[in-house]
Length: 448
Image (cartoon, rainbow, N blue to C red; front, side):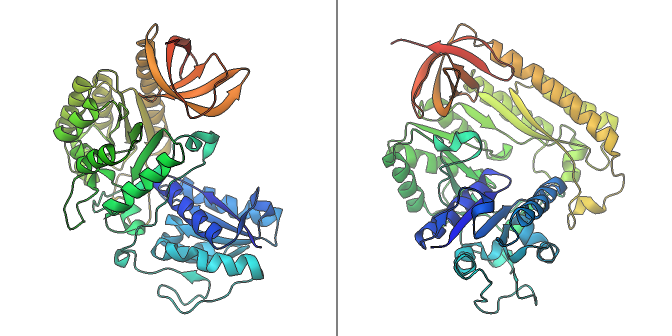
């Protein structure tokens, strides 16, 4: 029996791709190794959203090859789709498979693990190099997906991630993702319901729905369904106790979707709404499909409908041409809107994107200072949000982490919680909030 290890990098969609690959490998009879060093074949499922993501993948290849030169390394994912020859040239890499052929990873991983050598399965488009298998991602119509049952810090062991959409039809000038993941594709309605019911049957209490452009789910299906329609169907046709929605673009936070999330006790009160910039000029240069005032209207509507909801955003600093005035517009918009957390990123030039060729590229030192300023503002807003729950009661899902007789948990509104008790994982409990931790809250069980 061959052994494998899958290592994922990047977003929840990538984690879901990795879970689907694991399912295929297990179905083929391979056994999961405890670590990359102990595996006969290692599948690296890569990200390429920033230059740092590429560096992380290359560092992993070097580390695995150094620790066990006999291990066969198969590299797939977004970096593999974007720069396959670059990866294939690295010592230790046996084969590179792009997202275009990710559904065939098991066909190549199994021979690698059993024979300890690469076995060509035929000529495929994309490269003259035998160990590079990459084709036209825009001809790709299949969606590889399976629930994620395990992840960093054990969170997904109680909060499985179900990818229901992949690809993106937007063309943001800074983003490489559409060219490595292809057009927007939706997981078939019946498949979503079946997977959700399987998760419920396994005993999971919360399911996280994810995608590259999640709010576009259903637009490519014959029924032209909406994401809100999918949510209603999951609520009606499954008994899942809690649904959590990952990132949804601002233009897809319709009044219908906001109203549904607000009104259903089974949908977590949590909205992640990418902003990127508060400057109209920069948003136009980014080719984003909304203006600052449109964005503000959506955030204010969410807060009006859900007073206790977590509201987060992705923000980019240092985009080419971002002046001090542009940055101040972003900072001022963030300051006045009711955010509870931010993911702040420094612009990273991606080869092949329009922004890479733009003039007025930002000095790194300036971008880092702007990043620091927004992180500090986000920390202040987050602390204020957490303080508002002192003396109150929240529902939280227990995680499989117990330290010093305290249990880690995640509240409905996305706060990290420490419970003053040892609790089994995967329990939905009411906790009374007693105080703050460095980045969350702590409390005790509320006796009903």
